[in-house]
Length: 632
Image (cartoon, rainbow, N blue to C red; front, side, top):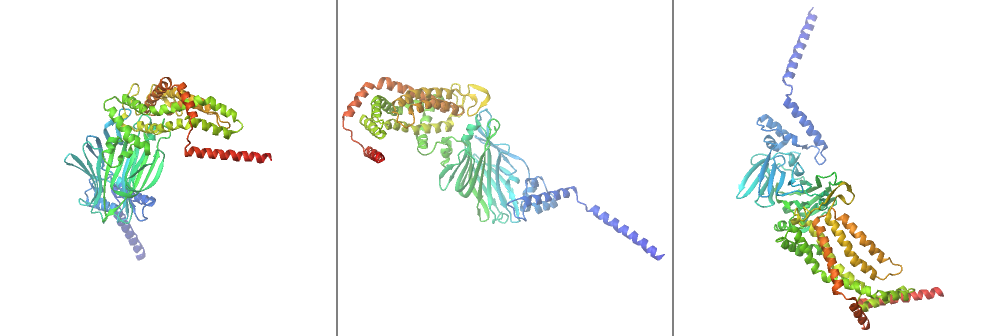
């Protein structure tokens, strides 16, 4: 009986113990907030394991960790500190808002998240569709500093929340964005915006973070941008969209329109250049190394119509006594030569004048000349006036070229006789031909040299008109924008290499170049002696007369109408000059008499001509010796 009683007491005891344990578990079960915190901790752990550059024991802090507002409870602050370390204070005061600031040239929005610009409008300009020009909008830009902390975390400033302050310094507006550890310890982005100025003074500095930032890890500044389309033809705009940069004490270079991935040293500025606008980061202390990359986002211009290229730049930041202190500038503005040149920071390299001699001609001749003419003439008339002046300056070159062609035409019967006389001896025929041309002063080279003189001018102007910011959105006749193509008809379909529209200026330029080539190439082909075993130059030049206008028609249909206007007027003037020279200046009978007179005079050969004659004579002797050996 006693044993049964003991068993009953044991059962009652076990029941009581189980009840007490159940009550304790119920009392200590996690609250919904604690469950949420546990889930976040789990996500952090997964992110840390997947982070390539993070140490194995690091916590990667993401944007979601900073979405709590107004955290004042000390226990919650302790919880944040356990997850975010020194930056728990920033998390406790986080606010996902924007700060709006305006100047004469900018309308700006600074985002508390990341501390960088979330929107930048250039107030003085509109795009091809009369909409505002935005260089930054809808998260197309990123600015981030990636760094490690002494408590084994990897932080990205683009995911953290800054505290904004807007003050005035005279007429300048100062925007301070602080990522705080405490009120006296922080990482600060400081922007100073000046009136009527496209350059923003920009400083990244830390205060009191020497025991927070891990100095043994690389601190990277990452800057990225996707360039918005601003022009009517996105493919044309994309040709002039690339990365420009200055490095090694003042050298300037650019990637070109193709995709690029480059490592640079001692970089003082990097510019994400679009056709007419640029975003540039400049530094007072050169970045020792930099990595830049660009990728075209236009693969089909009928589909890809929003962005031109994606740009990326990565630069390591150096610590000074354990703190960040990098003085920089940000330029957001037009690629206008007068504007960028005024900063004296080598930013005029953003204007694609061309390289070497061509760039020199554009910079010191054509740019000042066009600016002078456009100062009192409408822009279309200024192009015509500039074209007239250039053609008049080069008219003596055309005269020399046409005179040489006329001489060869007059000599053609005699040259034909020489070829017939020495038809079995090609080397002798060439010697006699050269001798006759030299005596008569009618060398084919005399016609080529004037053409070569015109090439630098031709190429320089080809670079000048597409890069002339002043032509942007300036109208003339039926063209409403001389920096873009003109349209007289829209096509219901797209023609490869041509487009879905018809431009009139390229058609006029093609017709003009066809008649110009008939007057020059046709005469030159007739004057050129036909050499046996050589291509038929007459046929080749005839093909060129048709091929060149067709190529211009297709190639320039999407190009700036200002450039097509120049070629149209230029070829019209050339036709007029040639007709005047042919009908009123050159007298073929007089030229023939002069040639005959020159042929009678002893002609002193130059050293080059003597050397050529000797080489041809030696070649002829060797050939004769070989023929004799074959007969033996």
